[in-house]
Image 1 (spheres, rainbow, N blue to C red):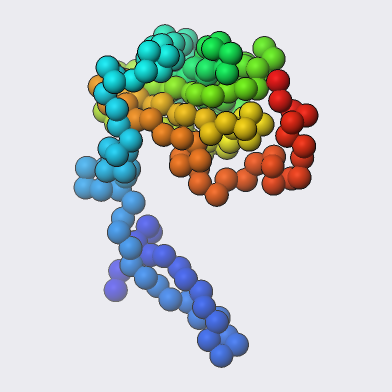
Image 2 (cartoon, one colour):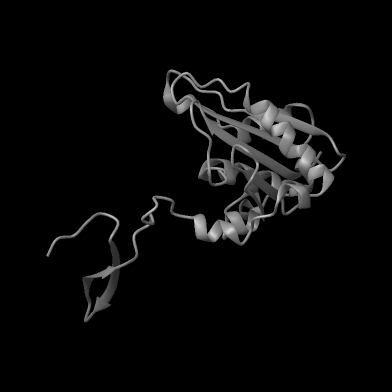
Length: 200
């Protein structure tokens, strides 16, 4: 029998004091169309015209910032914009580095720029992406590192941050809360820190 990586989930269980390994077959991560999460994204989709005016403004700010991406290696453009409780919009774009691990995503550059300007009270974040010579079809969600960074600000501001992510032409837009985008998240609250001292 041939096994493929991704087809097997390993489960351990204790049997008479010994550990046995059971192999269970699961559905592949990627669908035949090659997009793993398209079906799950659909339930969060909202047409551009049905977004609130401030959400539209935030997404447009992210789209404008996208063109400032520094991406000589991936040639992938990402823009982000965060909204503070006071109504200020602060933008970011992905910034790559010859030492690849030193690259920063657009979402984190926007969050860190907000912090540098004295804002940790983030209530929403929008992000949008495109390729150098192609448009994205499915909304591009924040990566795992960015989700973790958003959680940090969510816990500090005591706000379940709204995350808006779009495809290149803004014909497909998803809106979701960060606690749904990264459930069971670890954050500063788990370290028994007084979060009120971190708020600005």
